[in-house]
Image (cartoon, rainbow, N blue to C red; front, side, top):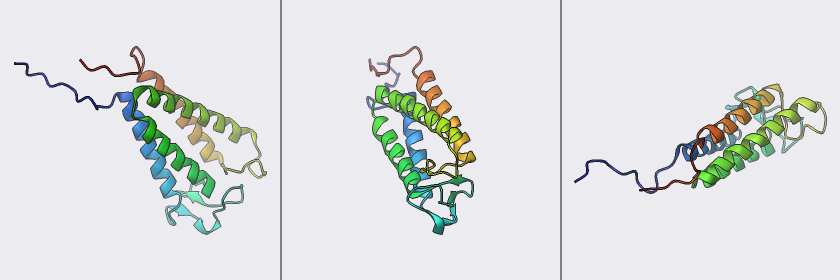
Length: 152
């Protein structure tokens, strides 16, 4: 009789856990963006455009659209964490999107109509960190392994 416990068939791989965690974080940020007090100057929040002075935690400029994007990214993370290959894709593509958003935030004039999300300097640097972290997780947690889990 063997004393080794087998991993349950539905156990999540590290890349799935990372995608799930990112999804939960994005959902939390999206919800917090709609809570007065957590979001300062809540009464100035616009659907989109740089005129929104609402700031999550008093730092990150947000709008209704910005919060909805966070919620969508969160839901995608939850849904795509179901398989290792989808979780990896979520982290890599999501990370690439955040790097593009970082570059976009650097090149646009923050007081122009092009800043429709809206973004400020704190958002830009957070997007850089998120992009790098998500890509790193997608690569490092699947390095040397197939992206599907096999159970013996």
